[in-house]
Image 1 (cartoon, rainbow, N blue to C red):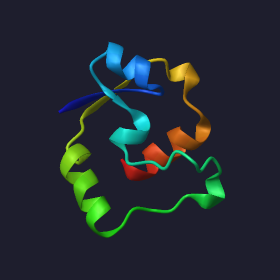
Image 2 (image 1 turned 180 degrees about the vertical axis):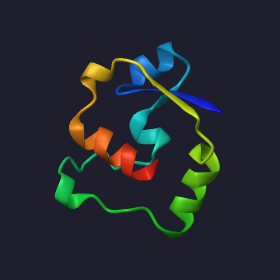
Image 3 (image 1 turned 180 degrees about the horizontal axis):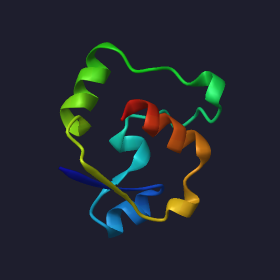
Image 4 (image 1 turned 45 degrees about the vertical axis):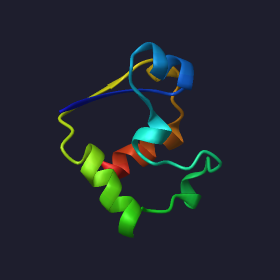
Length: 77
């Protein structure tokens, strides 16, 4: 399974993909590593159902992705 993602809604729309925040259920208002809260319960189960079998992740406009989003996505995958 492959997933296409982008840092902004416009970019995600143009590639028929998801924003990275939507794909990985990341909070939009948190931008610091020390505030990272691992997913648990129903949200984790929903995420694993959606992206649990990812083999390829294609990120458009990767240069716009902040280190927090990259770190958080890597913790989930």
